[in-house]
Image (cartoon, rainbow, N blue to C red; front, side, top):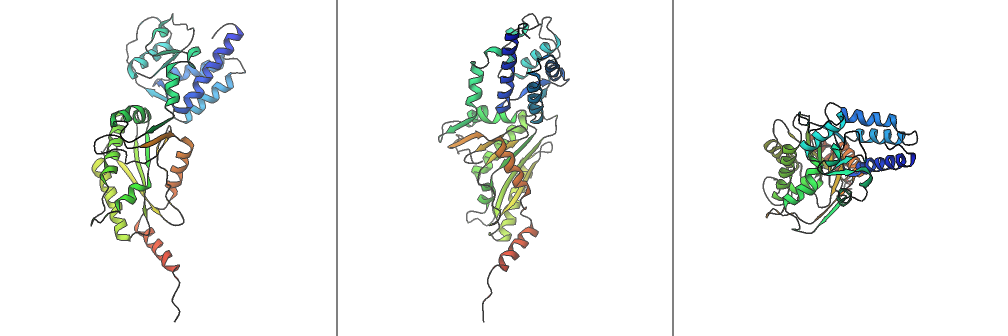
Length: 338
């Protein structure tokens, strides 16, 4: 903390800016032992009265959104005689390879943290390349074939999935697509199957398997479709989940009824315990050549969480609900007069 008042105000303001913007589309890596989280809380106790409440409020909000993520670090110190929090942070930086390591303008660690790879001084954050990259990550607009699957992984999926614990894909058209066509048995079209398998396997492989994880798919079927065909669609989706999921990370498929009074949402989302993305075209992203189809991806945290709550409350496509819906439609048909 700078000694002079003007320097202190500038420093506190800069730290607040970093944390406020982290709420948009970043996670903050901390240690499993809690040294960094404790250090942040202790810092608030030492800050001037006019700044400390905002710091505490931001830390509470970040914690509530699961944006303070404990990760494992190398046991061996990076080197030097820096203070405990700095050494812990540097070990995490060397292990996890974050996009940026925010360091103070001045520190008690004899300059060790100033030379860290991808280090960004608090006072230079606003004008730095990391902040520019962070702002560009708010939305992505793609024409057909602009990106490969690997491009999309690196820019969109990996940052969102790597530190997530719970993932939900919301796309009503996945279920509806199974009933289209003339096949005797409903199946998931390849364009959806390929994308769902891709996202699931990426999440399974890069997220922390030592912590509880869930992977859910929410989709819809039309209640006007013949009941037996609808139930075959549900079974096709559940079979996909059983065949693709693993014992350590099963796939949970929730098939909802699309009715005249309660339509499944048109917009498609990828929602995690940390954030939400609106996926313009939904989860048929992959062309057969492995390129990405035209789409728009943008952060939509509040809307994604609201839609997830709505679809969870929607009726399942169960035999009982299908019978009830059929009876209700029949009751609305006027009887013929003799």
